[in-house]
Amino acid sequence: MVTVVGSFNMDLFIETERFAAPGEAVHGRNFRRAPGGKGANQACALARLGTPAAIIGAVGQDAFGDEMLANLKAAGVSVRGVVRRSDTPSGTAMIVLDAAGQNQIVVANGANDTLTAADIEQHRDLFMQSRAVVAQLETPIPSVEAALRLAREARLLTILNPAPFRPVSDALLHLCDWIIPNENEATKLSGVEVRDIPTAARAAVVIKLRSACPRVLVTLGANGVWLDTPEFTGHLPGFKVEAVDTVGAGDTFIGAFVTQLVDGVEPRRAARFGCAAAAIAVTRRGAQASIPTRHEVEAWLKQPGPTV
Image (cartoon, rainbow, N blue to C red; front, side, top):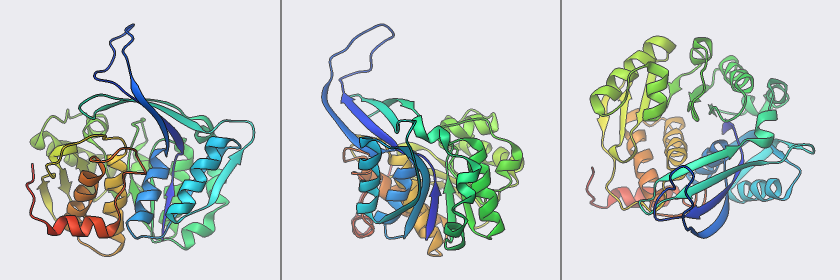
């Protein structure tokens, strides 16, 4: 089993031809809602891709909380580590999608901000049953650090997706076996502006030196990933697809990549599997609804297809 410590957000979508300029109103269409949040998305991806998963997080005692928990249960994720708050609403994300499938997101964290280190400690038994722990930065930093420390005590694989970016201590980074940022997060963690593959490589080296973490993977969107690990260092290209919705693609990658790691797959092959899962996801709408199954990814990889 893999335990995810992270966030729940109900995603509220609206589509438009282009993003509005400051002070401008533009016409939108196709309003819809769907369960999201980086933690919930990654737990859903793990389960859908064939790895038993549990999540520790917090939601409100409200309709959004009910719906998000029901959705994860249906995917096969254990939600017994989720705290219900009666005095705080569930997290909500307002997402605008343009005609190119890019997105702008504003998040109201709600109950996510109430997750404490004590909440993590109360579910120590989940760590004892797990092979790995995955965390992001969409819940309070003390809860993230508590999760990584517990995982280290239990000798579990520790994976940090530092998203959305917040300043973190070197001590927290030292608790990680894997750090997996995107270009923007790698830039902020390293001080090296990531613009292309060579700058991604330089940023990864700086992150490794700062964190003493042996394995760094920088996701590069459609351009694939940069890996810096003892097993393999280099660029893996992405897969060329027509994107309709990029929301949750990074979370799909994380879930797919970790499913392979805990199965003992070497990082290069695990990253290719993750890139394929994310490529399938961006051709569909929604965060959790777009996540493919393991069978779909394996079948897709067997087909001849161009990479970027």
